[in-house]
View 1 (tube, helix red, strand yellow):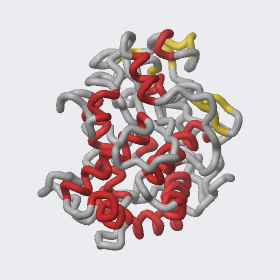
View 2 (cartoon, rainbow, N blue to C red):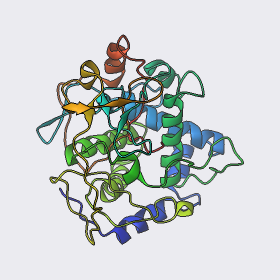
View 3 (spheres, one colour):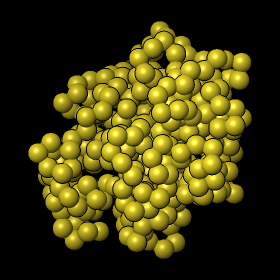
View 4 (spheres, rainbow, N blue to C red):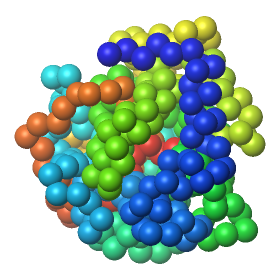
Length: 322
């Protein structure tokens, strides 16, 4: 299903979810899962939600019977197409935007792999690419879901990452199936923690309408950051947004920085540049609805397998934060 929502409708849905009151999805489910809703517990819930979306089922709060393969799982498919997001995070592809005219390889899996995520942490330390990515993801989704206690004066800070997700992801060359798979994992993670299918579907549609389209006009997803380009889907197969405003710039498939870590993805003839902290790929992805994953190796297993080749993090996906 192609979500050709008007950007105004997307903004309205996000605005409603972000309303700072007790009826927000964040407040509602923090209270349901953790019995109290404070800055600390809201941050804790977002940590478990994002970590589960990244590495798959691990949390004691997860419901039996809801399988979450994880964004970094191997052997996944969406709409019959193989999807592999790991090379965007492990240094295999030059897909991260660091302000130049082409993508560079950045290792977002550099601080503990799945182990700290399974301990409800973003990373082992606080100065790594992994830590920055995961904490920004916690903050970003907290803002979208309307966490009422989230502020810069509490332990659960407001989102302080890049305002334009288009700019963050523009060198990745993402298509609709990759983004759909990412969004589906977020939805499955939410349902595994007790979020109703109806609420999870509403969030998924909002993410798809904002990110899994091509040429969407600017919208203010984080109110204090103002209207920005947000659409991440750049291939011709991406659904064209209503009131489309296509950027003049065009970017090829990201180059291969490390052929082993790229796992067959990327443009092998393109010269890739590695950034600090060795290897590593950039951002993340979003999604439409439905779809399926099959014959998968969990995100935990995938990261543990990659550990000998790169410092694999349970890095979430959507490098919404960098």
